[in-house]
Image (tube, rainbow, N blue to C red):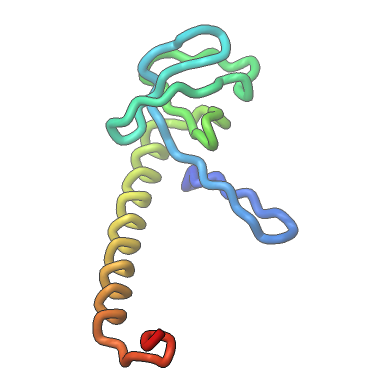
Length: 111
């Protein structure tokens, strides 16, 4: 997969988004600490059965679980896309706020 956004399509079209994190500390056989964009998080590594992790390794994380080990290039590409998505999202929020400030009053506003 060129992109580690680990999207899982289900029948109702729900998706899961995995976020890359870099292992900073192996806590025990079940847990590790990862760095995700400067924030440290404790994650569960049980789903990586059979894979040994070391400091500096990159993993794909979803709801506190490491789903897969990924390479650094894939992790950096995904992180860059997430930053880009954040910028677009913030622009949309700004445009929404501006459009609300300039809308015509409705009957609901009179209540």
